[in-house]
Image 1 (cartoon, rainbow, N blue to C red):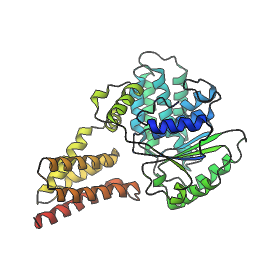
Image 2: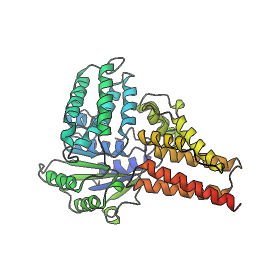
Image 3: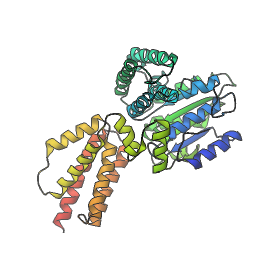
Length: 394
């Protein structure tokens, strides 16, 4: 059980104990930062619930085989994430020729495809051709004998191309309230002895109406249905929802745990990456060094009492927006400010005021109702005003 949930021993031990003792609650909340293993743990929990052999780690029963690639009909997933970095990392692992990596790729693509299930998305018909083509490619790839080189290059490119089209088609992070009602109605018709698992990611980003609909769902969930909520933070989740779930906090993974994920799950050399985020972004073609250079440039402009370089700023914002890197840029901005402080080029008061502005931006993004790049731009102008005020009172 939970063999690849590295760095979360406390949560894993608790979940294993509850599953073995049949004490798992009907509603759970896995909270923690990105790349902490919340979705992997949720999917493994679903596999164990469905397993006909008690959830043994290497079980190959039909339910476990379907669960490992997210094809079990009674595991419903609504994911809110950057899908492409995980798909690209799985593609890179597949090229190492591992059968496990093939399952990993199939699962990562199915997490994306599940966003277009009829339960969640009224626009499913707009992507039907891409979904059917992608499903056919995955079936064909699964039927081939695993060999050195993995899935044929042509199929890899098709998976990449179709996955990108689907990811670009997702325009909202909110789950419609009608979808929650539809799901609840469908689950009430399932066979009484059939277990079902519903995994909802990014609950804090749902609209107020959807959160209220989720609350009603949690108040009267159908029998033998387990609901697992995934969140990067509990602050924007209704207290009434929090009161109806058992909380499982996922810690930020340390260096050793991150290295285990890179080495043992994706078959890459962990020495080449300074974090899991860097690993995943690099696999998806992001030049992480360029994000760092952008942050350094923005901080350097704050030191200069001159006009903004609007063209360079617009170029940075466009790139961050296109590659969904605003949160990464905020992290780099914080690191650069701290390094200036440590080198004595920035006093503590100004660093703290700047950190407050960046933190406020991060909180606004978590519950955003506008594009992240717009919030980031406002944060930069706010920093400029803080620094201007500081210079005038120095």
